Length: 172
Image 1 (cartoon, helix red, strand yellow):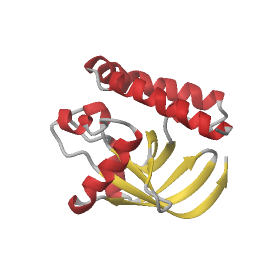
Image 2 (cartoon, helix red, strand yellow; image 1 turned 45 degrees about the horizontal axis):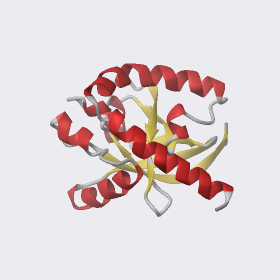
Image 3 (cartoon, rainbow, N blue to C red; image 1 turned 45 degrees about the vertical axis):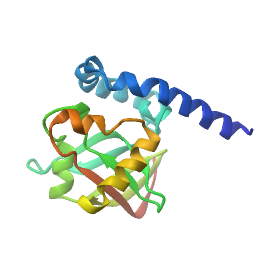
Image 4 (tube, helix red, strand yellow; image 1 turned 90 degrees about the vertical axis):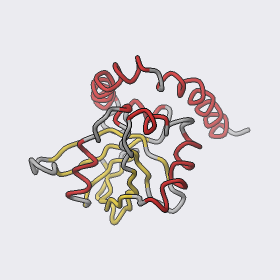
C-alpha cells in the first residue's frame, strides 16, 4: 500500500474511533465553544491553509455575508465531496436547537467563498431539498459515521447545502 493509501486508512480508523466521542453530550456542550478557539489557533499555525478538523476530515473555511448585518463572516466546516466537484455541508451546530448563523447567511446570500487546502474559490450555495437529502446524508455519513445523529438530537431539520464552485480566486 502506498503512502497515501496508508494515510487514508489511518484517517478512517481515527474517524471511526473519534466519531462516537463527538456524539456525546459533553462534546456537544464543550465543542461549540472550544472548537472555534482551537480552529483559530491552528489556522494561525498552518498559515491559514488547514483547519484543525482537516486532520481528520475534509474541511473548509466558508466566508459568507451576514444575513442581517451585511458583515463578512467566516466559519470552519467539515465538508463531504459530492463526487461532482461540489462540497456538501451540514448545519448541525453540534446538535443545538438553532440553525447556525452561516446557514441563514447562505439562504440570504448564496454567493459565498471557500478556502480549501489553501485554494480560494467563489461558490454558489444550493439548499439541498427533500428529494436529495437522503443521498446527501448517506454520502456524509460514509465519511463521518452517525453524523446525522446531530439532526435527530437537535429536534430540527438540519439545513444541508451543496457548494458549487464557480471560479478560482487564487491561493492564500
